[in-house]
Structures are given as structure tokens and as C-alpha cells.
Length: 261
Ligand code: F6R
Image 1 (cartoon, protein in one colour):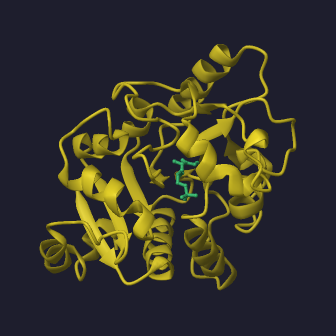
Image 2 (cartoon, helix red, strand yellow; image 1 turned 90 degrees about the vertical axis):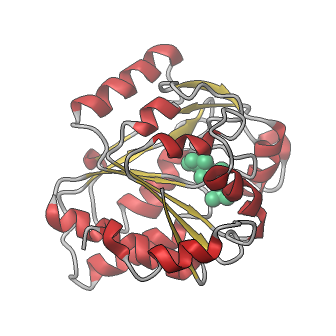
Image 3 (tube, protein in one colour; image 1 turned 180 degrees about the vertical axis):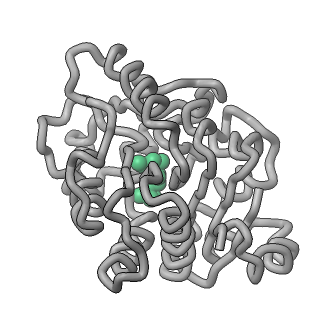
């Protein structure tokens, strides 16, 4: 696992956007897996700026979603489909046809989950999967004690995650769905490169457990330890509980070989 410590969220966003741009230059139709939530927004802003500046042609890139709420009405502004269209697909100038995600309003949720795993495989697999991390160590919405081999499926959100996400629903906990479809940990591990961004002190404990703790279903993000190419980008605040922070600074900060540049 490569741990890259950056000064702040903006620097993290810029670094990861450049890695994505480099991938798209090498492979114009790359399948980019995106996450939602607040953390990746600086990545999307930086990548869209590169597209506008003509530094990368992303017109053939494909985008896929990590997870989706179950039961929100179609077109709800906080459905992750709507969020990804708004924050990623439109700013990159892509069409809706270049975008795939699980159907959270399907009548047959189990079938929709299986169909999504199949669709990802048929699309050739995810080239680079962006991840955020929950304060409880979740990736996607694989909450603590998720199977490390899990595939895309329906999950129940913990109370902590619903409280964390209430800010997207007028701070009204009652509006936050209880269920989601999420790529499983096994599905996430199928991606060729995993890039997790964590910023802010609130993520410091989860980051320390992910990077330096034992591999454990209690901390789903620790499954990144099993991946052959996982990169964790953290700002100083999120790095504040890492025992090996100095080692990581010396080893990775000035050597962005992981960016494929
Ligand atoms: C959402 C997702 C979640 C978030 C995590 C952190 O698609 O995959 O794992 O990344 O809940 O959310 P923020 O970035 O809002 O703190």
C-alpha cells in the first residue's frame, strides 16, 4: 500500500486528478470508478479543470458508480446517480451513456445487484476506483463486519453513517435511507488500481486502522492491504494518527510513480 501524505484536501484532489488524467491519456476509454460524499469533490473539480484547459481529452472515458441509496425516488437530487451526473459526468462533458450505476429503485434489488457486477465485468473491469472512507472504516457502503469477499449487494447503513450523511438531507435523519446497494469488497478489489482519499481529523483513526491495523472485517477499508495496487492519499490531519507518517513522507511524497506519469 502506498501512503501519500499531502498538505491539504486541494493538494490531494490535484494529485489524484493528475493520476486519473495520466490514465486517460494512456487509455482513453478507461473505466473510472467514482465515489460520492464530500471528500472526492476536489478531485472532480481538478479533473474538470484539466479537461477545460485541454490538458486531457476525457471524451471517451467511462464512469461507474460505487454505491446507491435504495428507495429514493428517481431523480432525487441526493441519489448517487444524480450526484455523479452533477459532479462528474456533466463537468467532464460526458454523456449519460458513458455512465453506469446500480439501480436503487429496481423492484428486484437482488437481480439489480447481480446485473451490476455482471455489467462491470462485461465493461472490462474498473481501471481506477476512487474511494472515500467512513468514520467507521467503511468503503463503498461496506459497513464493519462486511465480508471481505462480498459482491455487490444490498446493505443496511449503520446509525453512525446515517448521522454522518444527514447533512445531505437537510440534517433530517428521518430522510436518510436505511438501505443502499454497494459494490462488495470483493468487487472493489477487482479494480486494477484503488485510490482512497481521506481528509480531516475525523478520518484519522479510520486511516490508521486501515493502513497500520490488522486486516479485519471490523475495518472494511483494511481490505486494501490485500490489493496489489492500492494508494492511500491523506492530508496532514487524516495522517495525524499514523505511526509511520515520517516513513511514508520519505518514501512516497516525492515519488509519484503510482501516478503512472
Ligand atoms: C460514497 C462512499 C462512502 C464515502 C464515505 C465518506 O459513495 O463510497 O464510502 O466515501 O462515507 O464520505 P465523505 O467523503 O462524505 O466523508
